[in-house]
Image 1 (cartoon, helix red, strand yellow):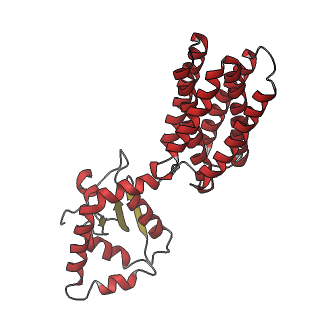
Image 2 (cartoon, rainbow, N blue to C red):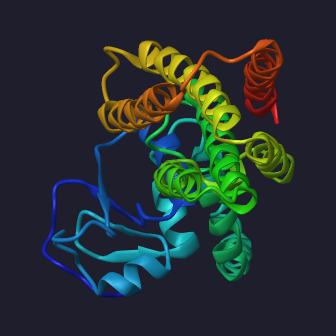
Length: 298
């Protein structure tokens, strides 16, 4: 590429910050002590002054040299590597006759498969979630999936109009929770056992619905009591950390909704549960705890 702009004080690296592959690679480069100053520009950021068309700069990797000239592809990588410790040997190799041509052909081949690789990388990319919270968010996603199916099971089985309205109203809230968790937890980070969580949730709602409102309300109170504690543990875990305000707000809002579900179910109980119902609720509580432990792992 021969496009030029006025001279500048240092080399500028023009990279696609919207690409998870590019972000990871550039982060590695930025962590190195370059032998000469390097300026890093994300060409995907709106409003950024660019030396060429945005679409052109996002299609291939570019660097702009101090004299304003642009290099792309293998030439751009070689120019950058020449300034980075641990990478200079590649720049030296690129000066061997024919090596730069082979590198360019390899880069063109990479560009053909990059869209598929980006889809996989985005499935693993969770910038809003600290690494030590990924397993927790996976358990939340599994739990909200199960909760959606608990209320679906109740609504499908019961013939009580008030209980059906209760299930549909709370089910809508759980579907909103699931949608919001999905927004921060990429698909590749979610539990592999989602079909099992759907079945378990459906049975947890459908079986007490066969018995009647009293059994349903006791079941929901038991489930939501566990979920309240589960969310509180996560909130405590990230309390005071920088950069997690949005995640904390999500957890707090979901917890508040679950507490409201629990309190409504408790208020609707006309009498304390008997021994069989208490045993069922204990089974539901222990099953929820086991599901969380499993979802954190798988």
